[in-house]
Amino acid sequence: MTELASSLCRHASRFERLRSGRLIPSWRDLFSVECLFVAFLFSGVFKMLPELSFVPFDLTVFCFVATVTAYLWAFLAGRLDFRFGAMEFLVALLSVLAWISIVWSSFSELNVDKLLRYIILLLL
Image (tube, rainbow, N blue to C red; front, side, top):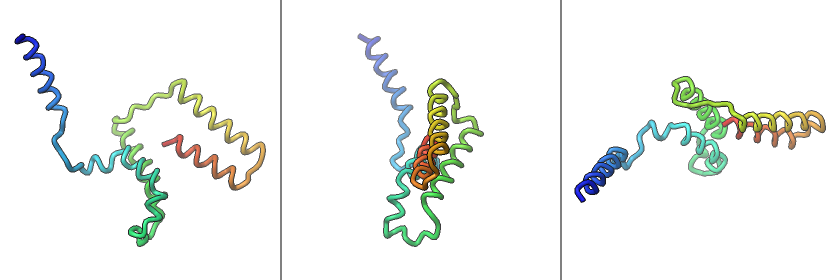
């Protein structure tokens, strides 16, 4: 019985150490790669808000540049594990095939726009 209680207490202390105890996120949390990527995904919605109409630059481009910069920073700092496996190869092959089909068929503005959106979302 004491072994069970001691194992539960050890588990609880480990669990307590994992919890940060912060209610307000830090700057590191707000400018993380994940948070900036979500801001990029929702930047179209942010642009339509009347509260942000005073911003003199395009929020989508800003969020894209911020996300790419955060990815590069995390990669160069060694916090981002980059592996190029079979699944990544298949996605890259699909992107190349989509580009070839655009080149082969037509360069209409709609097709090029679809391809660029697809590749940008895959790269992030």
